[in-house]
Amino acid sequence: MSDTAPAIEVRDLSKRYGSYEAVRGIDITVQRGEVFGLLGPNGAGKTTTVEILEGYRERSGGEVSVLGHDPAKRSIELRRRIGIVLQSGGIYSHLTPREVLAHWAGFYPHPREVDEVLTLAGLQEKADVRSRRLSGGQLRRLDFALALVGDPELIFLDEPTTGFDPAARHAAWETVRSLRELGKTILLTTHYLDEAQELADRVAIVKDGRVLAIGPPRELGVGGSHYRVAYRDRDGELVELQTEDPTGLLNELTAAALARGERLEELSVGRPTLEDVYLELTADA
Amino acid sequence: MPNALALTWRQYRLERRMFWRNPSAAFFNFVLPLLFLVGGGVILHGNQHDLNLLVPAIAGMSVMSTTFTALAYNIVFLRERGVLKRIRGAPLPTSSYFGGIAGNAVTNTALQIAIIVLAGRLFFGIGWPAHWDELIVFVVVGVVSLAALGVAFAHVIPNFESTAAYVNAVFLPVVFVSFFVFENKSAPTFLLTIAEALPLKPLIDGLYGAMVTGSDLASNLDALAVIALWGVFGLYFAVRGFSWEQSRT
Image (cartoon, rainbow over all chains, first blue to last red; front, side, top):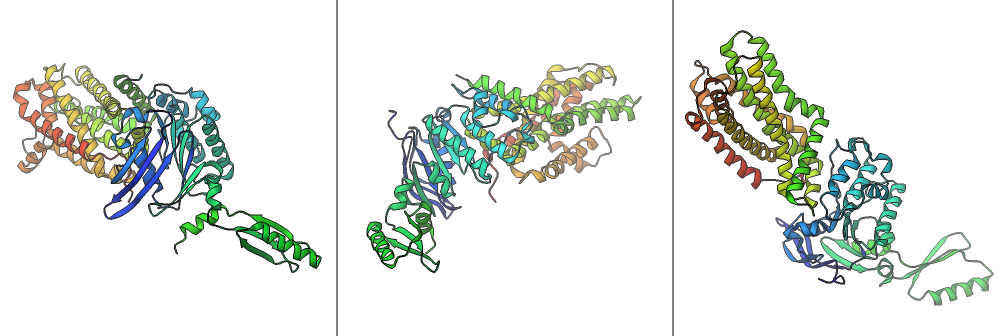
């Protein structure tokens, strides 16, 4: 298997629980070194998909390859090369982060230094405190640290910042960016649009077990939708117009305003955001 | 490259460290049977016939408490807290993980049996065990069976809050029935029948033979067979129904 092969390939993946279809034919390809976001509302099938890739669940149909392995076979060799941040994973409450990380490091052939990982996760000051005394945010950082200590090529982050305050979120984002700079491949699930927009090179918008749209966040924003031109008129009312040709519209508006001797207060031209696309695609029409 | 044996040893050492750091677990699984031994010894002081019964009965109870009770608690706790799920995602062989957990339980059993045998010799006037081989065989088969039953029973327990209720609903009646009918000529037949079908009474019988009366292994094979049958049953359900995750209901 060459290093240019995709890190993850998923073809027509499906998962049924009894008569309920959680995943209904998902196709995604994640390249090496890419940060890929699975974005969607709760219950969209994001976690089911990720847990199939992590080897926790068996798929009902389709083909899956993770670093060239079928994750359903649960080979130790694959698990040595991936790092997993679960949505909710507990840890030994009577051990300190340093002890837990040292233990975990022993599972891997080429682990990172425990101190280095503690620093990367921002846990230096809590390194020797028993885990039961850590806050929710600190435990989440320990989750990150445990996923990184084996120096994995591919990292799964399942809603890594849910429940974080804004400062903790930005700290987590910085960690993800630094992992990306190290050349790691990252598969991220989130229901936060800004998170997907900030972090992901490409995003798949998922709903009801299907991919509705896929692409870089910027391009997703542009495709098919309109530019928004907004300003306040002389009565102070906000006027919002949509167009596919902002140059022409602006020319008309500004010419008319100049002719009337007015200014277009708070004039702005906006590209449709990921949020617009997301809301449009996931609306229960 | 970490190999499975080295990883088992690491896991075992971690489990030992955690065991002593959790005082309430250490108390209930380790100190409590020994307290019963001391309390019983004080009450029955001077009555050698009863002391002869007390020591093997407590030894049997110790095996059950260090394996069945401890593992049922542990597995439910780790499952509900999500530790098992995390372990499952790590490159730790399943055999190494369970080897470490089982080794921890076996160490506790061995320590307790050693303490009880020593106390029997020093304070309870029952001397050294007449048949060490019989003692070891019964303890080993008892540990394997009751440990497997503990893991299997963990599947039945729906959440951590109800663990104490579930475990005690099994542990206490089994201990009471087994103690009550043990060498008790006036015990009702139906109770005796029940107790002999359960694993604890046969275990105590075997330990009684090994530690006190000197009846050898060959004469207690039927008791050993009952424990072993429970072990087969326990192992089957321990493996078959094992759940690494909290159920999502």
